[in-house]
Length: 456
Image 1 (tube, rainbow, N blue to C red):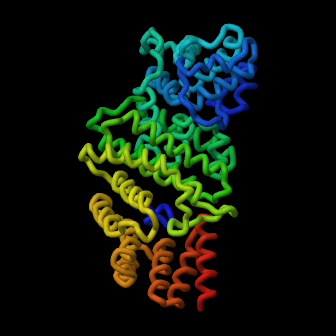
Image 2: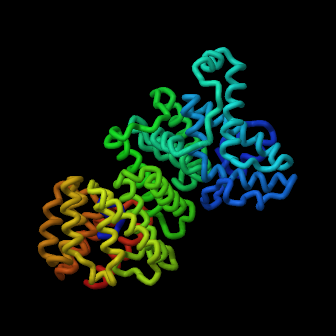
Image 3: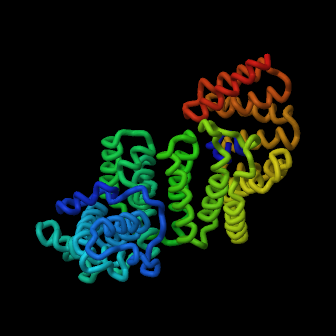
């Protein structure tokens, strides 16, 4: 479990389909393919990837630009048009135009700037063709938006994560507009039909419009109210993938997207230590990815992981990020959770972990986030810092609040087993299995139940 009880065993628009739509003149609403993220600008030498007159090379480049810069481009247009749908439609038109012109004319020095400027012109053309649009045009500045910048990307992320939107809407919009995933990719990651995710995105966009959510960067004094919603969405994206089966490739993609979003937000908001704290937390968990599953795709708990498989360089970078955040002197829940994860990551072995310090950090976390799950995690640390008997007392004290939570029963089973009370341990483990819904966790608990039965 982590500080939020999300992880068992841890202290405790455009895909390949957009190209045919672009050639037919239809808006390419899903301009995304699963290409690994890499920021692209005119210094990257991307022109060397292209061959004059070859449309396929341009299509691949546009895919990559979309995956890295969709949020900034959509943000630049949405901020000025005041309408996400119009911005998406305009950018789709611009992508189609690029697909037609770039093979012969070459790639412009600033591809994102070209796409935004072309999209702006396409949007104005559409507005001129209808009466409502002509009224809208009177309210717009005549000049095209500048090349997308930090504020445009931040505006899109904050709009997608607006607290007035439902949680499913926030997650879907963030992955779609901020991460550049296609509707099909998001549907596959969340194991829902494509039509279901398409409807969810449609409702989310409608909520943006009907609730008058503005595409603006909040003033720094508003961060205390707005930033937690953004951080929570990114954390949820990460956990959706982190708790998946080791063989679930699509859902593991959510882990990478969560880490990348957290890093980007930390870079965009360098004076917000909680953004850096979240990035460090996710980086520390992700650094153990190779050791988290065995060859059968089953969860391997922290105490059994081969630490030689951990990414030591990634751990060092995350710890440096966390230290810089802590130096700002504004502690928060994500920094404290990252501190706990860092203690685990830096320990030479499970037994050598500084459990007293882990427990102390959970006390500080509880002061900021008074959740019974935080106390349950502290009880896990208590077992190793003070012994299983006081840990059982702490766990049992939470029974009235966590009796329906599978990890409460799992933690109780482990402590009862350590106290040599096998029958009670088995009963607790069986109850944890009954309550668990995540397939990977159910498989883990099933193994635990089997072990306890063999000990009787």
